[in-house]
Length: 122
Image (cartoon, rainbow, N blue to C red; front, side, top):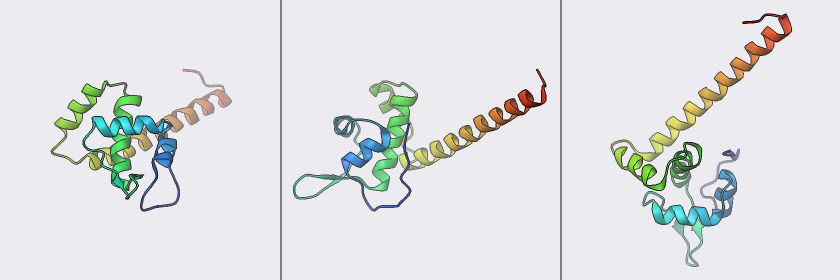
């Protein structure tokens, strides 16, 4: 499950991004090697700093790999096919679709609860 931060920051550490997505830091480093789209900034010591754009790309990759269960190669192919639209646009669309899905699930639950309380059955 992806956890959203309420405050806006210019950058996030690898630890913060890993916690947000519920993955290990090593997973993020691995994804960085596998997906050219992930390009965190680094300071003189080599510490990674992820900007919002990086986090949106990671969110898209997380969705493909962890939620949809794609293989690395499958996810790479999807990203390659979507070169005409930016990965960030895809991530934003994914966010909107997930919010709509959550709202629909909530509405179905509310209707089911109403039917149960009123004694209605399908």
